[in-house]
Length: 183
Image (cartoon, rainbow, N blue to C red; front, top):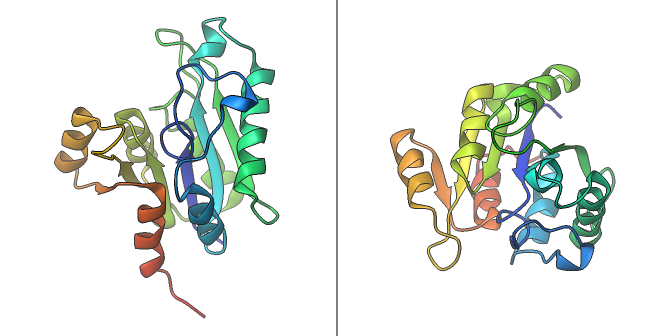
């Protein structure tokens, strides 16, 4: 499989409660589990999440890992599930290694796993997600929901760069799967 989805966590797969550090805070967004299950049949899945609460000292890397593990339990994906996870602990203003919009994780993953960039997508709810995908030379998709988390700047950026916009990760995956050749 040479295609991949790089998926943001907060406000894309799970509800965003600022600086989530406890697994019990993790609640899936509607359709998220169904979306990643459908997508996993056609795409490798990678999770990318900026967790500046680590760099700011609000919680530890182990807490972020525990939250991700809870999300993976709730998603209940068949093996192998997500092929990789990037937790960027940098606080804003610190030197950036993997913090989005850095394309580093995507580029390293494409090279390591032999992915085809034109078959890869970054899916997220913020301009930093979109820029991470664009900076890596892959497609980006914005999740922007007028009934919930609405980001006017991200919407304008998406329109300016001809980036597809969907209300949910479920809607985005349904659209992507319409273009996937079926056996």
